[in-house]
Image 1: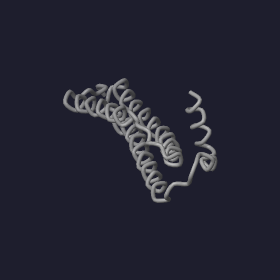
Image 2 (image 1 turned 90 degrees about the vertical axis):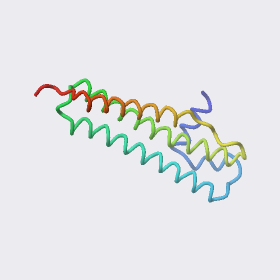
Image 3 (image 1 turned 120 degrees about the horizontal axis):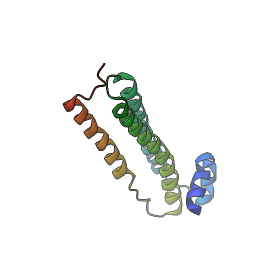
Length: 132
């Protein structure tokens, strides 16, 4: 829990990472930043998908539409938070000459997106509309 609190503080003060050890080869730091940006793009796509489901599928039953939209929005928010946390943890590990941190988040993200996709397939096949 103490490490997580320290990680969160580093989100808002990344200059403190300089106190965490040696400066790594800049190519590794830039690769870490590119990975962070890829996770942010993924988060933005998920948030956009959540809004799209809510706004452009008005004929779906309210519960189905809101459920799918909420799932996409929640996974998108988690993805964005995970991106910054993983960036800090990787940067710290590189500075300390430690192994890079492992994460279960890619599995969680895949399961969340997969469940929403399966729900969308079911909706398309069964045509669950609000009856307008």
